Image (cartoon, rainbow, N blue to C red; front, side, top):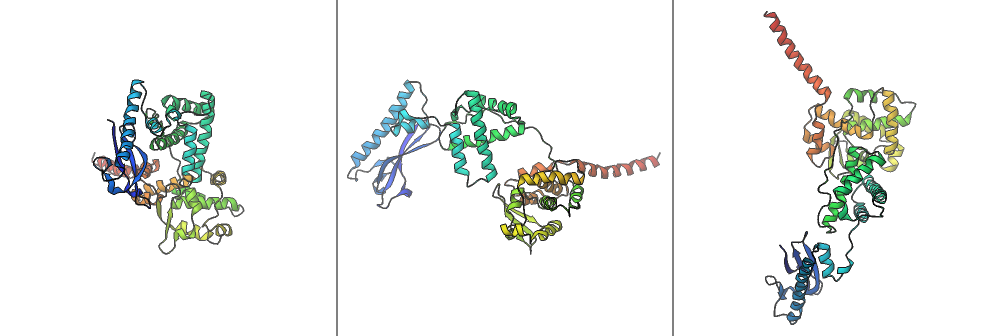
Length: 405
């Protein structure tokens, strides 16, 4: 149901003691609020009648402006109805501002750029790079699929996303979960556009993101000990990478948080690490285990780390992951290691050793404990250990039963 009223925003009062009058329209998508370009002393405004009081010397003139604006709106709605055209937030705003013939549909790539520019100081560098890359991929897709340089936001519907998913799979070799990440970033831009009234509704709402089940690669305590015991005296590069990876296992820190770790984040007296996660801005509180303490002390006078004011000399993520291939080969493990597996291993080892989920969540810096609960799946090692105890119980029972025969 359409509803129109007028109101004064006293919080926007200027230096002359005058506050602006706004027009409010409800019932067309999101609420529309438009300035009437009128500012007057609040004592003259009647909040119940949405008009100026007769005590104002120009009340007749000012009220006629307000009344005419309301008449214009209802006339516009009636005209659009007769023409069988949709009344939208954008069209109403354009009409009331005198730009009825200049309503341009917002474009997807422009929205992506606006999203990137608006969030570059809030999101980390890697996240922004993902959005920039997606913008380029979308541009290539739109040119190939639609022979156009851009697409309307409202056209990013089920058909568009289905075609885009096929494109990512066929021409870029993306798997199901990678495609899901691309679609989620489009959804983030669409949600921003909704909040900005660039579109009336979510055109992607009918599209369901598909996810394939995954098995997380993690290390056991024995495998971590095997890596830590490797002798790299003649290869400082691998020695540093080995130490940094194991430190992530001992603490649960991600690569970016390890790179940002500084001496001021380390409370030696209480044996705690306190750091705000780069990804989520959530605070982490991590107890420093003996092996982690040993590594902190090993690098506390490292020239490269001290020069940057950090606790460790951390190379790039790419170089770390490349070196980890050599480390795991030396350890004789048939696993593909990356930096993030260190963090996953910490969580799984903690879960398997009955550390409370709340404590693990705080150490990992998760915004929600639901994120932490993905590590609560019982590992095959734990199943084997638990059934080992059960076998002993049944074994004793069998022996006693046999003796009774």
